[in-house]
Length: 107
Image (cartoon, rainbow, N blue to C red; front, side):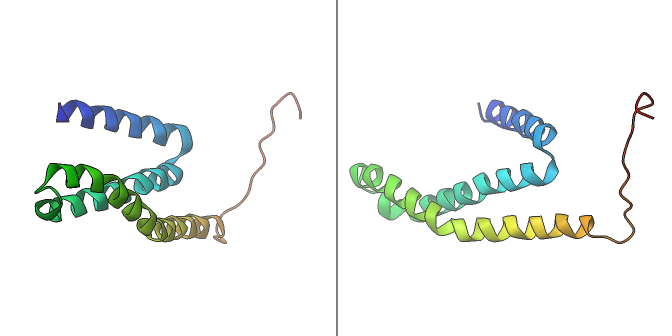
């Protein structure tokens, strides 16, 4: 079942990269993976304390997930701005020549 989920996620990632480009897809994927990874890591580390009583664990999962998501947003925005800065460095290169394409019918 895990392989099926990873397969679907891989196909969706490839489609998203094809649709919007590398930098936008990377920013979107990272904005999903960073908070998800932090939430999973927190729940795995705090699992002994939180999930000793199942009712406390179920009640506390949603608030901790929302809190970790909100706390991780500055990190995600920082990484996204760094990616934007790196892609803009290639646009501002002096060796790049802008060219305009014209069809044969317009010439």
